[in-house]
Length: 508
Image 1 (cartoon, rainbow, N blue to C red):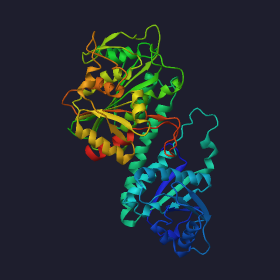
Image 2 (image 1 turned 90 degrees about the vertical axis):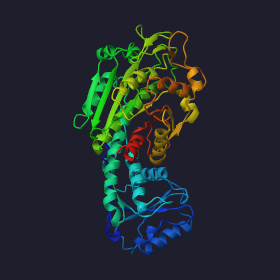
Image 3 (image 1 turned 45 degrees about the vertical axis):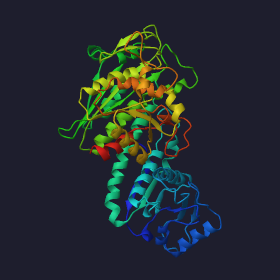
Image 4 (image 1 turned 120 degrees about the vertical axis):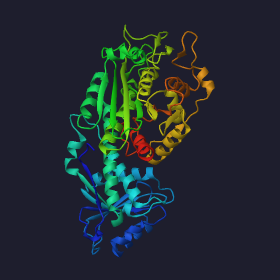
């Protein structure tokens, strides 16, 4: 992770020999402490139980209480941090991620520079210790993210003396596996941080050209081949969808293609991400309220880029092609107009009804290009429709596609990693809504089922027998009012962990 204020370690040594300024112990709202508290000796165990009984801490999720280490306890740590886990029967992976972020926040708040955590020693609601450690470590790293590039006075500068070292206790027979899990989590979280960094960049800094430069630089020392298709190359291939969207901008569009090949002769997985570096809506201009957030309209592309970095750092034995079509959607005398008809790279003619429905136009060419790699499956991510925000809010992404097995596996991976997705139908009736009287299809399907008709549009650019999933992250790609401690306000990096969990379980 970029934030050097946090470091995570593993220990399977004797607790009484641990030194540091803190010892973290979990307590529940049923008035009990975690079983591992017994390893601290009777003095600490009895004091924790007394505090619970007397109501000093109720054990509610995220609640904390800091006390001096009782005298003659035999434990070298100076203070004990009790941290609530809520209902012991409702502890889940996402709750443990939240707890990890809350643990690191509590350390900074109370000036604890070194803490030893017993929390992962217990089995929590059926979650074994080594998995609990993984989830908590993920929460610590995700929660430590900061985007302060453009702050003259950085919070991280003020916190230079607040570097926190968190050591998780684990059982001796789990220590090797725990260290492997930590290495994996760190690489995945770096991918999330990269996606967040890209998403948080303002439109005057990040445009199609500078995004392509950034990707090329990022992948230089990794086994990822990067090729960038220029405006001329796009025109040669007839990719008029992306060209039409970008024609109003002074910065021409690009198509970024990343190839990671470490899986022999296996078919690659293709991942595609929409990257509109700023979306004004074009001629169909958006209202001014919150238009500044349209810098986040490239979060789908950011997820693909972060995922490609993570895959390369993890050295997974797979083949992956990442494709990021990128453009600015800006109104000008040269911008595309409502009523224009464009011929996409696949040869399908599209009537443009609304220039603010531009994401599907650039994805159309990108999906068609992905087909040229004969992938085992195609998964695309896009901040595509406001209708998805209305339907699902910010708690999960919308998902649709052509292959039930692929969709089921992605849903399962989402539940496990916290990047949740929810399936929506692609019934034939919705396809009727995008029929055009003057072209093959139109780029909007009317007010009803907007997320689904956008998916229907994309389906036209994927071969019928190709497993394909479209994930609409319009509600989850960023959050300016986030209340989750492991999701700071701004770009979320959603999609990176989902893809990593999916390939880990089903492609590797």
